[in-house]
Structures are given as C-alpha cells and as structure tokens.
Length: 89
Image (cartoon, rainbow, N blue to C red; front, side):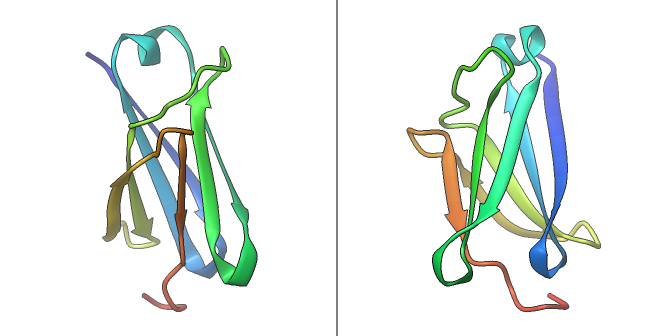
C-alpha cells in the first residue's frame, strides 16, 4: 500500500504531517486543513478529495526541524485538536 504525506506550516513554527495509508489513499488525494480555535488551540481536519473522511488516520505534529512532537490519530469526525508548543520547541 502506498502512503501519502501532507505537510503544512502552522503558527508557532509547527507543521502537521498527515499520513494516509490504504487503497482509498491511492485513488483520491488527501486533503488536510488546520484552523486556529478557542484559546490558541488548533483543529486539523483530514479527508480525501472525493469528500470521504480520513477518520482514524495517523498524524504526526512536527517542528521545523522535523522533530516529532505528537503522534495521534484523527477522531471519528476526521479531526484532531491540539495546543501548539511554545515558540522554539
């Protein structure tokens, strides 16, 4: 199975890496977006270009030096919410 990896820059020099593995990932492009929420939290949502959810997909939150800060999975709605680390982490 081929995996897809998506990176995006986030506030506080944090990047999110979404790894989507499976046959669906081969047929459709991954879509991953993040937005700032209440009290400085960030909520990221993952899915596929056909509109299907990426619920349960593994994600990694990494800093600009590619150091893994958090490993998690998207919830049943294809979302993950976290508080970014302090600048320079």
